[in-house]
Length: 206
Ligand code: ADP
Ligand code: ZN
Image: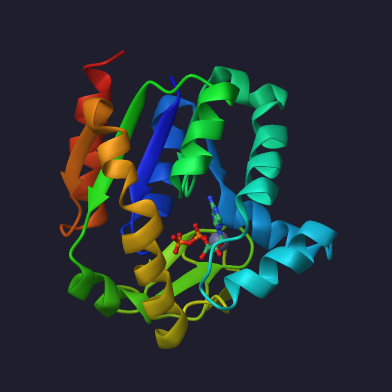
């Protein structure tokens, strides 16, 4: 089963994707994580991506699509994958059609004022990638693996506002694009409640 998670930044896509990988044996593909990995390794793609990410803008489609294509071609993706953060534009969605079959599109629908509230509290584990929020967990180290938590470079108010604008203009049109295959979840509840709803929906599809 191949799934797309659609939603604004901080809507909870990453957290949901991680839970789904555990229960359904799917591979999580986060283009944001792939870019951050490239930045860490100092690749050309990473250097280019960083200049856009730091401003809250999208990395150009050609670069993003090529990177995704290579990731999907890897063997582990054959058992099914969850796309977290891709596609983010209509041209990316058109390109995806030629790369893979998609079974379901799940949209996490969270009001923008809730998103702004979450934005500045997000913390990410430097080792295992677990995501926390200071409103519910305000410690410097990861509950799962003990590694230090950090705040992403692009999790500041200015960049967050830019990312929300980019979402509204470039990504939200995908809701119509995928209208026939869309499952919408109100994502303002806690992460576990949201997950239960999605899990039940997907179980009905297997
Ligand atoms: P979030 O989970 O907060 O939505 P991501 O980690 O998915 O953020 O993405 C961080 C940044 O990486 C984006 O703001 C953008 O610059 C870049 N990026 C990630 N995915 C894509 C994509 N599909 N197309 C273009 N840029 C992307
Ligand atoms: Zn950790």
